[in-house]
Amino acid sequence: DSGVTQTPKHLITATGQRVTLRCSPRSGDLSVYWYQQSLDQGLQFLIQYYNGEERAKGNILERFSAQQFPDLHSELNLSSLELGDSALYFCASSEGTVRNGYTFGSGTRLTVV
Amino acid sequence: DAKTTQPNSMESNEEEPVHLPCNHSTISGTDYIHWYRQLPSQGPEYVIHGLTSNVNNRMASLAIAEDRKSSTLILHRATLRDAAVYYCILANFGNEKLTFGTGTRLTIIP
Picture 1 (cartoon, one colour):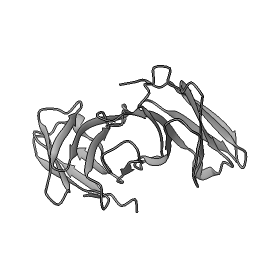
Picture 2: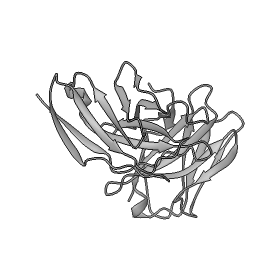
Picture 3: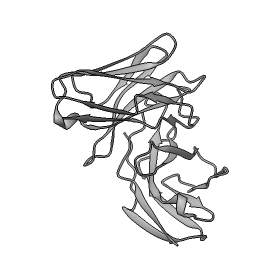
């Protein structure tokens, strides 16, 4: 157990639907990062939150959104799902600096059918 | 984002040391060098990181060149469980996101 909890582990849904992925960071970590990993692509950075505020944005589609709550857990919302959104979605957490390592969760495998 | 270059793949025999190289010629003075590894169908796992000096932890050692333009991750005694994709990443204050490249796929030969 890395200390970062992601739920659910697996999700199967139909095209056009909306899903919410949840991430609880390691205790004490203020930053949460979301990544997408498709079969034919590497780990793509989506978005970062630090203590409730958006800090950095990557190649996140407009159909996707995220937020970080006061208890520091984060949710990634994916809407109008397409087949191409099928991927592993990872959450990572850190203290918020690069002076220490980042901790990743075990991911949510999303399958859009 | 500062870029790193790693070999696509490497092989090593079990129980022998492994040296994984990474070039980062455009590194800035405040870039930290992070190493992560990813086993199949698992999330990336932190291995080690450093700024200027060599670093050791229970998993590995990180040797950083004096000019910081390259680094080497050293696994002292490879096991089959070390077979993974290893990523060398530069991270900076104000740009804390980790940008993953294609990494080095390490195969351990029994």
